Image (cartoon, rainbow, N blue to C red):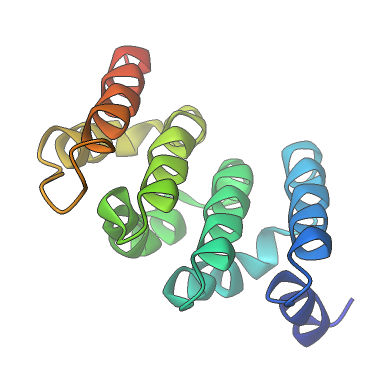
Length: 145
């Protein structure tokens, strides 16, 4: 599939199809390196205005972390870490929950992951969301070696 076609499908207004497509790519990515050459394209979706697209990008990057060189993956982590405190709390939670998969695939990032989570400023979120995000952070920190 041409890059423009898979990106168009991942960013489609048909959210159900786009999510299913992202899930399929993520599943394939956990089994083979087929989608690894598109890591930069997935990373670019982190800047998408639609939080659902950002969620898809997060899951695709986590699924492909095992195939990327440490240098290549580390280069995109600044952008990835911005979503630990994404404007949308569900995207922040998705990002935080993806970090154990990244840590397992890229162990040299564990200190950065730990620092990012320990210093995450959750004050932008409603009082009802802060405990949920904090619970996710605590759970991930507990999973890290």
